Length: 139
Image (tube, rainbow, N blue to C red):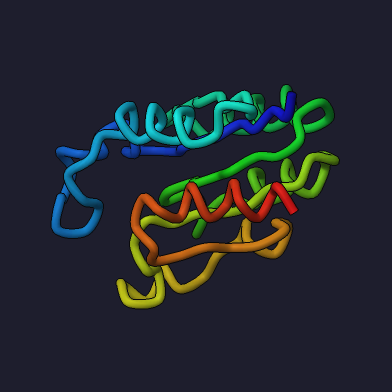
C-alpha cells in the first residue's frame, strides 16, 4: 500500500476558523477524511506542528520510507533554510502546497525557500491543492 504523509506547518491547525476569506471554512480534519475516502488504497497520514524543529524531525522520520510527502510549511516556506535543507536531505519526493495564491499576497510571501527542493509547488487552489499534490505523487 502506498504511504503519503501530509505535513502542515504553523497556524494550519486553525483551518476552518482562521481567516475563512483566505483559507475557507473546511477544517483540515474534515478534509483529511475526504482524502482518505477518495483514496482508499493509499495510507494517508497527517501531521501538524507550529514548531520548526518538529516539522524537520517529521520530514526525517518519513523521508526514507514513505512514497510521498505533501508539505504546507505555512510561514516557514518564506523563512526556513533548515526546512529547505531537510527536504533536500531526504529521498522521498515532496510536493509543496499553499492554500492561498502566495503571489497574490504580501511581497514577502512571493519567495519560497523550500520550493526549490520540492518535486513541485501548488499554490492558490484552496484545499484542492492537497488532492492535486497526491495525484502528482501517483504518476
